[in-house]
Image (cartoon, rainbow, N blue to C red):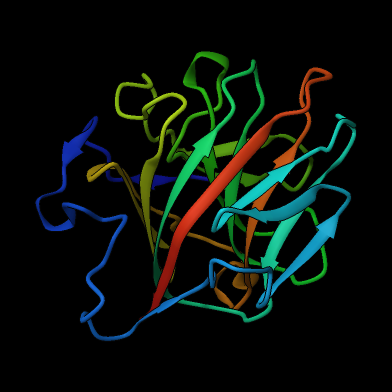
Amino acid sequence: MKIVAALAGVVLCASCSGAGAPRPDEPGWKPLFNGTDLAGWVPVGTAVWKVEDGILVGGQDGDPKRGGLLSTRDAYKDFELTLDFLIDEHGKYNSGVYIRNDAGTAGQTTYQVNIGRAAVGEYTGGVVIHKAKGGIEWLGKGDEKDAIRKPLTWNSLRILAKGPHIEVDLNGVRVADVTDPAPPPRFLERGVIGLQTYGAEGHCGFVKFRNLRIREL
């Protein structure tokens, strides 16, 4: 598939300063997480999801074979999503945000915005799809040099999905601006948003999320 990716390295996003925290008075925004429990979310797979001190925490609970998604009950098509994340720093342990995914599955069925360590080929803010015959394809690699993500502390992520066009801002910096010129029709339909976690290299890691907000377009 030929991919059109409008990437100018890493460019500053003048319009998305503080992207992880839209103002409460901005129209159209709603919280995805109530800070108390998993209401509005559906765990899919064997990963363990819980709420600790107002934060969503995903992990393996001592068994690195555990993995899966925490998916929204509601489906979304075109939207702007903001959140904060904090992830383990072990090896290839990573996470991601699935957008327009099929409900009820722990697998990726459309686009994923990756969260991970660039040193091991897991680029935060990168937009990835699975190829029909296996393997993956990066539409954009996001923070390819790991210059913007802050290890072992909170990072803000903004995702805008409008048709085949996806923008990703990491800590207020535009790291991906891509357009898929020939997406399968399913990729443009409504689907759930999924937060991913799975064990890697025999390691039980963690990923944390907070301040999840969405605005439908």
